[in-house]
Image 1 (spheres, helix red, strand yellow):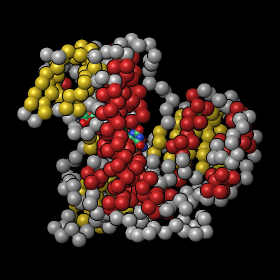
Image 2: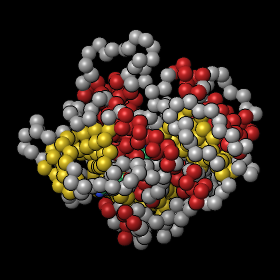
Image 3: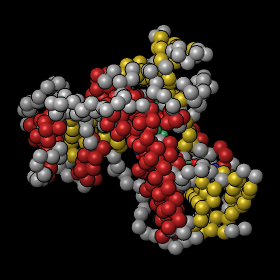
Image 4: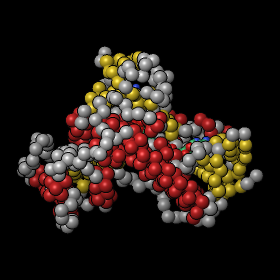
Length: 480
Ligand SMILES: Cc1cc2nc3c(=O)[nH]c(=O)nc-3n(C[C@H](O)[C@H](O)[C@H](O)COP(=O)(O)OP(=O)(O)OC[C@H]3O[C@@H](n4cnc5c(N)ncnc54)[C@H](O)[C@@H]3O)c2cc1C
Ligand SMILES: NC(=O)c1ccc[n+]([C@@H]2O[C@H](COP(=O)([O-])OP(=O)(O)OC[C@H]3O[C@@H](n4cnc5c(N)ncnc54)[C@H](O)[C@@H]3O)[C@@H](O)[C@H]2O)c1
C-alpha cells in the first residue's frame, strides 16, 4: 500500500492550497478528486462561473454605460445563451487545468476517484470498477458542500434548478423565480435581472443577506427592485405546479397566498457538508449540524491526525477563507511555523449588481455592543471619479467608527468595484486606524478611494453634531 505524509481529499480551493503547501515543504503528498475536473465549487460550479456570468451579463446588457457616454453601445446582434456561457466555459476550463498543473508542478500525486475511509489512516479510492487503497500519516478532508434538495422541490434540471444545474441551461429563462435571498440567490437574481429577465425572489425572513449592515442591505433591496426584481419577504413556497408543456409557466403558490408564474426556478436556500460518502464513522470523526465536520481553531477534527477545511466545516464557507484554512492545517500538521490562525478580520464580497462588500462590524452590531459609535458616508457621485464614471447604482461607502478613539470598526460599500475597494478598508480595520489617519492619506486623484476620505470628513462632522451636506437620496442618514 502506497503511504504518504499527507493525503488530501478534494481539489477545491481548500484542498489544492493544502496539498501544494505541504508539497512545497517537501512532504510526500497525494490528492484525491472524484470529479473529472479539478477545482471543486470554487472553480467548476460556484465562485468562478457565477462571477464570470456576472461580468458577462454586465457586458451584454451594457448596464453601466447606458446613457452615460452620449452614444449607447448597441450589440451587433442579439446575444444568445451560447454568448452568455462562452466566457464562463472558457475561464472554468482554463482555471481547472491550472489547478491540475499546479498540483503536478509541486509533485503532488493525483488519484481520480471517490474516497472513503477504511479506518483512520487508510483511504479507499473507487474509480468505476477500479479500486486502490492508500495510507495517510496525516489526512485533510476538503470535500466541500453540496446544494441540499428538500423533498418538496421538484428538481428536473430543465426548468427547476439548483446552483450547479443553472450553469448548464440551454436557453435563457423567460422569467425566473429564486428561492432564498442568501448570497447565491441574490447574486443569480441580479445577474438574470441585469439581462432584462423578469425575476422574483422568495425569502423566509424580512431582510436579505442578514449579516450586512442594514442600510446597505436596504439599499441593495431598493437597487434590486429598481432593476426589476420583485422580492417576497417572510414567505416561502407552498406548492409547485409544473405543466407538461414547457411553453406554459410554472405556477408557484406562496405561503402568503400570492401566486408567482415563472418559466424557470432556482433553489438557493442552503448547502450541507459533503461527508456522506466518506464514511467518517470508520475513522471516528465527529460530525456536527448540516453534515459538517467539527474542528477546532486549527482545523483538527476529533481524530488528531485528521483535519478538515473549507466548506465541509461550515461557516464562513468562502473560497477566500477555505484556501487559508487549508494552509493553516498544513502549517499545524508539519509545524512550518508560518501560519497560526485564520485572520479574524476578513472581507465579505457579494457579487450582486451592484456589488456589496463589508469588513468589520455593522452599525447594528456597534449599537448592540453599546459602543459610542459614529458613522460617516460618501456617495460615489460625490467623488470626481464617480462623476466621470456615472453611477446608476447610487453607490456609497459607509464607515462605522468609535467616537471616543475615532478608530474605524467597520467599512461597508455598495457600488461598482466594492469588492476591490474594500481591501483598503480591511487594512484600516485590522490596523485599528482612525478617521484622522484616512484624512491624512493622499490618494490618486481622481480615484474612488476618495470615498474613504470624504466619508471620514463626514464622520468628523457627525462627531461635532453637524449635518454634513449630502446629495440626493438617503439625505436623512441617521447621524450619531
Ligand atoms: C454559486 C456559488 C458562488 C460562490 N461565490 C463565491 C464567491 O464569490 N466568493 C467566495 O469566496 N466564495 C464563493 N462561493 C463559495 C466557494 O465556492 C466555496 O467556499 C469553496 O469552493 C469551498 O472550497 P472547498 O475546497 O472547501 O470545497 P469545494 O470547492 O466544494 O471542493 C470540494 C472538492 O472535493 C471533491 N470531493 C467531494 N467528496 C469527495 C470524495 N468523497 N472523494 C474525492 N473527492 C471528493 C469535490 O468533487 C470537489 O472537487 C460560492 C459558492 C457557490 C455555490
Ligand atoms: N460572494 C460570496 O462570497 C458567495 C457567493 C455565493 C455563495 N457563497 C457561500 O455559499 C454559501 C451558501 O449560500 P446560499 O445562498 O445557498 O445559502 P444561505 O444559507 O446563505 O442563504 C439561504 C437563504 O435562503 C433563505 N431560505 C432558507 N430556506 C428557505 C425557505 N424554505 N423558503 C424561503 N427562503 C428560505 C434563508 O433565509 C437565506 O436567506 C454561503 O454560506 C456563502 O458562504 C458565497
